[in-house]
Length: 181
Image (cartoon, rainbow, N blue to C red; front, side, top):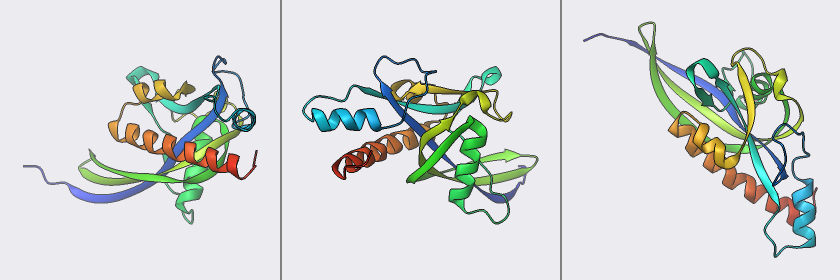
């Protein structure tokens, strides 16, 4: 039986969302929540005419889709790591909303077993463009929420996406009640 040394590793990233009309092009840049909030205020009984889209990063040669995340640099808080990494890997400018949850997993690389913990945060896209992503992944793209669940490669990230969608809905409702846009 092979012996591995064990190392703990930490990273941070998150779920980036934007809201748009139901029949929008996914390439179109849409202000994140103003349209939905205006509709909610004018007709609270009707279902919102928006779709939530989520930015994912991928490696097309391996057919892997994942949430953006990365490793801390010296002196960074986990929130700072998450903001930097999601911006670099997606090309988007984001606003941190809140902490969503944490996942843990292990993997072996070069005779070392890593016990990794990833802290995920919810972000609102406020600018940028997915074509401006760095080279860590060869593609960054927007997906409607329902498609994002199907595209994600790792089940623990599907769970985080579900948590983030719930938090996002509560956050949007709170903003609407508070009259923020």
